[in-house]
Each structure stands twice: as structure tokens, then as C-alpha cells.
View (cartoon, rainbow, N blue to C red):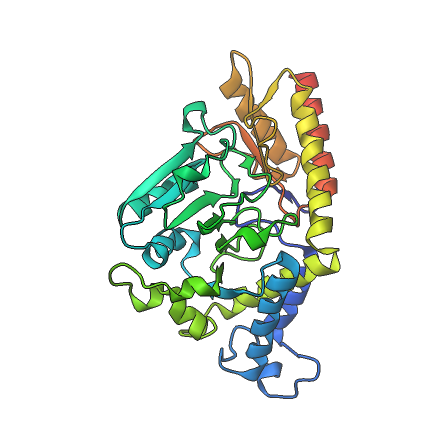
Amino acid sequence: MTERPFNFSAGPAILPPAVFERTAAAIRSLDVPGDDSLESRLSILEISHRSKTYDAIHEEAIALCHEVLGVPKEHAVLFLQGGASTQFAMVPMNLRQADRPAAYIDTGVWSKKAIEESKALGATEVVASSKASGYDHIPAMPGPQSYAGASYLHITSNNTIYGTEWEDMPDTGDTPLVVDFSSNIGARPMAMDRVALGYAGAQKNLGPSGVTLVFIRKDLLERTPVGHVPTMLRYGIHAENNSLYNTPNTFGIMVLRNVLAWVKDEGGAVRMGERNRRKADEIYAVLDGSSLYRPHAKVGSRSTMNVTWTLQGDDAEAQTKRFLAKAEAAGLSGLKGHRSVGGCRASIYNAFPEAGVGVLCEFMREFERTA
């Protein structure tokens, strides 16, 4: 077994070693250069979210979201709690307009959950879906007439369970585009200027679980919600208070800051995209050249973050169990696929090393040779 297992978990996921080191030091003492306040000599776990020391961390995290992720300056950056699942309700609560339905494209479990939450709150239309084929591809973008009268159009940019990903952000014209970026935020340069509201749970590419990044075009904050929206579920309240209306997840926001600083040092989203493409292509090459493994996602819709496959043959279930057991023994952790698809899944987010992909591919080839 390798000294430290290669972590293919879908999330909470791998973090860069440099981020572990910087974060560990901040747990002992922040020791901020140029900050001679008492707070800077304390742990990130115990300083006030109203202190100048924390304020500097908070503002740097916001600035890096604009710089590294490409969030336009016309968008407010929010750090919220409750995970992306809370956003399934907050989006329709805040953006739905009277007599205008919400429109969704269904590409799997997480988009389905968002659709169900929206339906509970008002008129909702599913304008495209890949459900009929087992969510093995991203459906063709429907014509604008199908969502032109909608309050917004919602998509899920990457589907962790099925291993599919939107190649580009669609241009939805005057209809606000809402995107769940939870599992591929920062994975490559994206046309963020097309996105009216984006959100992402941090635990894939941004940091630990417990922080949710939301960015919203400032003009949308002026929309009057349909019906009562509780204070803590209003984007406007959080924007007015710079995500400090109540005590935020200060530790998680600091780690998010550390991760984005690492991405910047590594060459930004451009370099991440190049690395992620190489990693994914290496695994897909093994799958496409195999008679034992079958990739779930179709060419043209394949994710660079979550590669999914099943094993073939009369004893496929037993073979899969043997594969996963041997993989664990070889130091390859977290390869079991989601129950909705079965088989295997390799989650290779930004921080996952290329060397680990090489080890996985060699293991897969050897397993098939001896199967």
C-alpha cells in the first residue's frame, strides 16, 4: 500500500498538501504578517468574525473568487451555510416571479432534487432531460421558446453520480441562468458572465464541507420574492451584510481562501483545466480500450471530475467486489460507485494528483489482465 492512500472520494474530497499545512498552522495561531493585533496570535477557530484579522481573510476569499473563478464584478459573492441542498429552495424562493414558472434541465439526482424543491414552491417546468437513457449524457439545449417566459433556467454543471458534465455554459439570453457548480467549480475556465446565479458546496474543489459559495448578479437582488421568505433564506440580507448577518463558517471560509490561493499559485483555472483534461483522458483511454470495463457517460458528455464505469460479464457483481477490494488493498480509496449506477467511480478533482491517476490506470490494466 502507498504511504498515503489516493483518495477518489466524491466528497468531502481531497485537498492539496500545501493547504493542509497552511490550515494546520492557522489552527495553532494565525500569525498574520503585518497584523500586530491580539487576534492574529489566536487560532482561526477562536477569533471573532467581527475582528479586523478575520475581515482580511474574508475579503481575500471574496477577491479570489472574482480573480480565480472568474466571477464577474457585477455579482455579489456570498458565503452561506446549509450546503447546496439548501440552495435548491433558496433559488426559487428568491428568484421566482409571479405568473412565471421556473425552468429546469434534468441531468440526474441532484437536478431532480432541485426540481422537486421548486415544484413544492410553485410552477416548475422540466424543459429537457436525459432520464430515459439513464442520465448517460447531457441533453441537447432546448430552444429558447421553451424557457423564454421562465423566471430562470436551472442546470447542474457536473453530475457526480453519473459522470456527465456540460461542456460550456449555455447562453440563455434574457432568461437568468442558474447553475449548480458544486462538483466542477474552478475546474477550468468557464463563461461565468452568462451565469446570473451560481452556487457550489465547497467540499469538492473549494474546501471542507459546511461552506456554500453563492454568487448572484446584483440586479437580481432587487427582485421582490413571491410570498414570505425567512430572513436567513434571503440573498439580499446576506449581500447587505457581506455574509456576516450571523456568524459564518470562519474556518471553512479560511480554507476556501487557502484553496483558491493554491489554485492561483498553480496557474489558475487554465492550468487546472489542462491538468484535469489529462487526468480524465488517461482513465477514459483505459475504459475505451477495455472489454471488461464499460464507461457510463457517452462521449461528448463525459465529466473530467467524476469518471464512472461498470464491469462486464456474467459475474459482474462479484468482479466489481473483487476489483474494489483489491483496489483498497493497493491504497486506492473511495472507488465504489453510487448505488444509482453501481460499478465504480473515480473522482479526480483539482487537488487530485496526476500520479494517482497513473497508479489507478496501471491497476485497472493489471486487474483486467489477471481477471
